[in-house]
Length: 151
Image 1 (tube, one colour):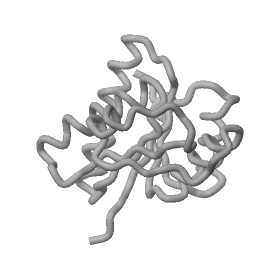
Image 2 (tube, rainbow, N blue to C red):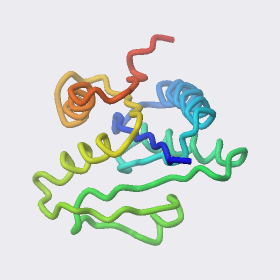
Image 3 (cartoon, helix red, strand yellow):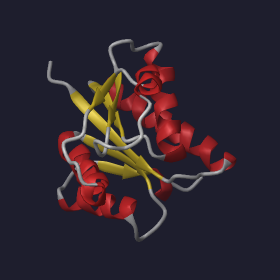
């Protein structure tokens, strides 16, 4: 069976109410993806949405022990506590890019390219996350932006 992966990108800060809503939405999405054969869930470890999505994956992992969380590091010289990361993720992918100026953008594009599906929580029309969302759209990558779902 070929591994299928999903990556996550989202707002740094959500607030309590949006975080609760995001958890329910992302939990449902991940549960459906697992039923459709997705096994790898890839994170860049930026902010509350990605943390919320990681917690949803971990809670679903109790019923689906074959799935795994993957952390994709942006740049080599980032201050990283590997012991803490190893406690949070099943796999850590070291960076390819060394330049801080382009590393996060490069990492995000690589995550989009290597994933079969992308889950976003992006409300801003400009900035790094918006650029990553636009990149996924241009690459015809299947995605959902949970911020667009009205509750």
